[in-house]
Length: 276
Image 1 (cartoon, helix red, strand yellow):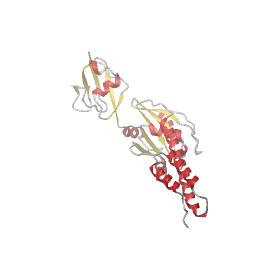
Image 2 (cartoon, rainbow, N blue to C red):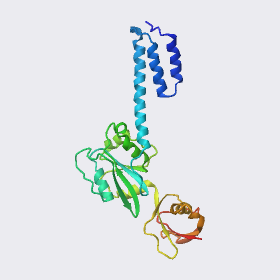
Image 3 (cartoon, rainbow, N blue to C red):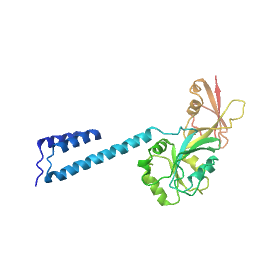
Image 4 (cartoon, rainbow, N blue to C red):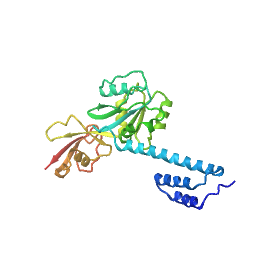
């Protein structure tokens, strides 16, 4: 038997199809419920409308949590880059943070012991890299841990700490890694600092004042950076005063060379600036 729906229902149905926002769609669906006659033949239509309203409200809650998490990262970036340690319980994240950053965070075999984000600084050949351990990943993490989504979203790279392929699949099911640099390691891997450094796509460049030895602490730059980018990193008006720069590259046949602003730098280059 037909539901015998009134003309007002079909008018609202047309409005619903044209609605853009979830709020507007919910308002129209609720109006549709108000004009539908209540009898046995209309129960299926009523049930479908209530299902749509429920789904729209759930979508609004999830979207609000996503925006809340992504909009306010709770840890200020320090150093040349920010890397987040991710993994399920008992894979050695706290052990790694202690080892890499000379920290002393309590680490036990009990799962979910880490409740807040822990921060340390990895010193890689003079370049400081901020390492952040967040609480363990579990099924449903993405929806429930909005404050940590913000940290993950704004980090420069991710480091997945796992024991097996199942751990990796869990992480990928909870974290959006599209277009994000990441590495996969275990807590017993060798050369982890080098793997982190290589993932970041950075180079170390040393500056030098004429007549003096190079600075001991390097400047970290993206691969492909130029002398001009290095000058701007030092001071925003530095390039305006530059007469020329001299490159010292011990590992190639360039040994010493006068260069311009567009010269592309490489790892371990020494740059001597001559200014007015």
